[in-house]
Image (tube, rainbow, N blue to C red; front, side, top):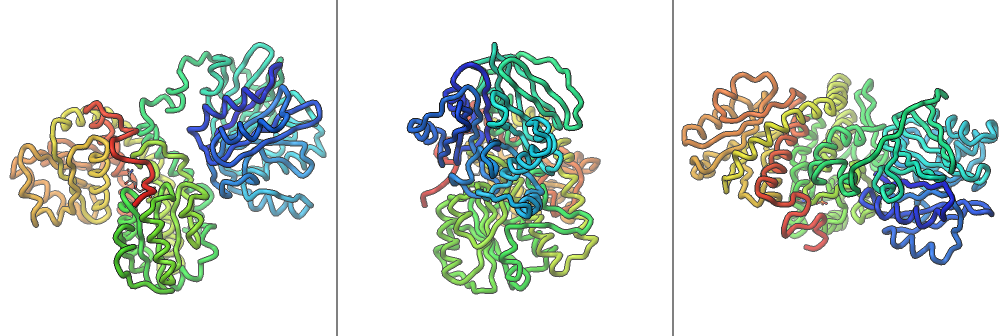
Length: 610
Ligand code: AGP
């Protein structure tokens, strides 16, 4: 998720843009850049790292002008570097664009444009937009129409701001899937990715809708659709403060990021599913496709929440790709003597891409000749740079220390990887299609679970008094139990113990009494009856049970004290839905204990030390 800001008016644009970028830094901060329209054309400055680095870079340059755009980057394609930093420009340096989103068909557009002589400077998907506008302008000689023509060729998402030296004092903005808001001042107008950077200048704003574009000059604005229909919609007064806006109106980033789950699934899947063919297209694995085809086994290494995703991935890959998989804590793998060779694929999962144990485990695996594949959220992170190949999550920045939406994205990537590898081995077309189709259904099904948020919040009130909890799960939701327990531990400091339900009778059940409740994953799947028996064993020992069950299940409510239902899905994908009530439960437990879920004590977002 990147941050965009633009200004056109009578004041110097640069200070307004830099101030706005500082307020947008929460959206992404691996690099930032500005383009300012001066009387002698458009001048730019770019810097890797935080906005402060850009401000420093600007000091040495005369970026005078009363119109300009700025961008703070969360990389999706192309690592953080100056050449990949927005604003991007075309061959003639007449058009400058700042983009937030993912252009799915950028490769084919890039090839078409290169064939007619365009040269590209960056590795990003966004740069194609500038060249498309350059190309269109030769025919339209009109910036608004050129942008319109370019946008019609894009597939994917964009929040966009465009300026051109050929039509000074004008900003074109557009929205498809990534928010864009227009701010109205006296003799000046603004564009931004959200309202937070505009609040100190104006509260009169207009949110663009998908498929709309706006033309801003100091005195006026017009809004039209891509098929040229003028849009007459009045502006609104924005009452929220910047902090509330950055959290999307939620009280904490934790809740915002849980609720982003459906969008994260869509973004993780974007451009990667060929549903008709039951295939998954993972461009980042092309260089190791032969290794993937002939590999004899897979070891997945990770820490914390990523480790739990790995455990689900093990079951997916073994059942549907027919390849032996082991899962190891990275912190163990790196110190023991793992037997690996060139026929071993090691997969490293890491949201931050900077976890020290995972990084060292990767180096150890490479020393022993394994091919290493990364599943990473932060583009250009150390792990992303050290693995042989990889798949980016495209989950957007995860601000809360609690990993929630990244976990969802990791599971979706593992399902894509299962299709990708499976369809090159035993997986049939029909199975591939079934998984692909169900993956596409997940966002809608996840939205439905949010309707239970109020019920989950009241359950948290009931359970907040307990100091101990047992989390039980089996098979695909074995890991869900451990992930749910981890969320509670790290957010509310309650002692929550994950346990494979089959293991309960081997010791754990001794702890159960009326002061030690259990959260049980009792979905209607291949281990449903076993889970029902576990619940009855707990009830027989006066233990309270909160069950996660499948919508329409009439039996669980007879045994469990509390039930939250989730929609039916394929068993291999059920952890993606089943974890949502547990994330919300942990979040509300934390509030019941008057703690801050975004910043739990003793924890860091990225454990870069051993
Ligand atoms: C998850 O809620 C925790 N914050 C922590 O376990 C985290 O998952 C772990 O440190 C791994 O981080 P990574 O995915 O960035 O490597």
